Image (cartoon, rainbow, N blue to C red):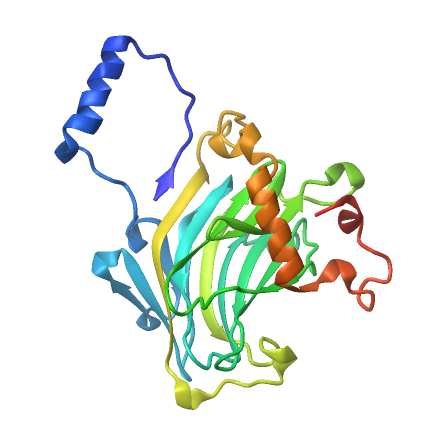
Amino acid sequence: MVKMAYPLTKFSNKVVIFLFVIVFLTPSLVVDAKPATFLQDFRITWSDSHIRQLDGGRAIQLVLDQNSGCGFASKSQYLFGRVSMKIKLIPGDSAGTVTAFYMNSDTDQVRDELDFEFLGNRTGQPYSVQTNVYAHGKGDREQRINLWFDPAADFHTYSILWNHHHVVFSVDEVPIRVYKNNEARGVPFPKFQPMGVYSTLWEADDWATRGGLEKIDWRKAPFYAYYKDFDIEGCAVPGPSSCASNPSNWWEGSSYQQLDPVAARRYRWVRLNHLVYDYCTDKHRYPVTPPECVAGI
């Protein structure tokens, strides 16, 4: 469900009391805006026969078989904000599959993109999630962690927070990656182009599992991933031009400009215990450490 940010106004005591009565004492008059239905904010972009709506459109099933994968995208683009979804990934032997959830500027040469890519694996092996950041057309900033739970057993919340200060990728409110705005050090940061929200389920067994060594076992097909609780809060484009620069937007607030102490501890725990690849330490690809890595991610 899309939510727009507006500055607060001062209410009289009578108005506040009236609102209290409306919200808390007459719940039958209040409609909960979450979760949004799929078609309220999204459209199918690829193989509509492989995306099935469930629970009255409040959840969907993505299907991958030998005929096709599938994908969907938000109807609008956004410039800063937060997007989150609850996803249940492919159970069992999912090697060679990729379930992706990302934001993309849909521009060919100078694209901005923020990626979650869930890399399938053989039964019993940990699920990996790869994140990547493209800014002003520059990508190749992959990091990979092994999830500390079975993401196919139940739904988990995956979110991207994007403001002028940093991009934060989180899993169940645990930050797994932070990409800071280091423009002052000459590092590009995505802040000029609005991005849409996308997701795909597709075959990528040329690289997804152990660098392409593990191929899809089509005998296990079809493969299913499930989504629900679609939530987008941000500045829709086209929309008020002042929204993206408005410091009153909640995601621009001081408490969202850096990780709080609890989030910072969780972040360190993930990095120490579950990080399995970081482009910053890959001397084969980057003999000279990228400047954003030196500055701190």
